[in-house]
Image (cartoon, rainbow, N blue to C red; front, top):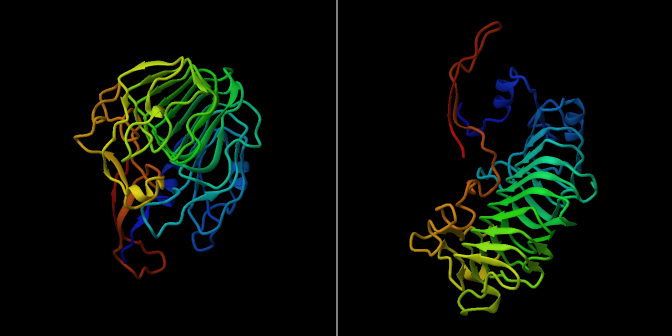
Length: 341
């Protein structure tokens, strides 16, 4: 008996002996877990615990996080086509020290929560609408996501907001007037930035979108690639830094030279024909401020999972050695697994 499965429940069992508990959730009776709803698992969990949520065909609904927890799903477009995404609707965070990884979010993040929150890490998620960072929030990492928009509080009352190695597929970032770093992102089919001031903007690729906006001021643009009109020449919207902004090392009206892009459908981040890694001949190859590639595959948190798969071990072979086990006998099996990025 041999199956290709994620080390999901087994990992949970393995780490149950550690200080923090691991709780499992599945709303599919064919994939049993300790809890059938995320809310029930969060009620039972203690601060610092981890909750694994299986990917199923059924939406888990709205999620309100009121404790410092880690929530891990199986991705928004898992590499294993036999594994459904872990889908929720609204995600609202009312606590500090929260990590959310590997979810397909069909609505907004923090749309209903107006409270400040600190030490928030949201990675490898797909967010169909806006991710809000509320007033006085601190220490956010927004990384390796596919995003519609990140919205700030339209004030400088936030600090240390890092927006790293994401793919933006429509309106991008607005509402920050300081203390935000925007680095190694890929902007596709966006309507440029909204109100943005005193931001650090480096190593990004603006492809088929406007990099320059009258709404951006007093910001620093470094080593970004801008090409609003692929195949159609230069654009005034490529002329970084623009306005009252400063910067250097930007590649204006330059094609980033992706490995493979279907230009007839370049705005679809999940087009199977698209590979947004840079060619070795690209102007952005090893041209970031840190010597790595410009765009989402460079920097300190390079995009490694296109479908949001969590960085958990993957079981590649699971063999039952003795299929028939007598009462009181011992089940023998062998397992092979590989590390995932």
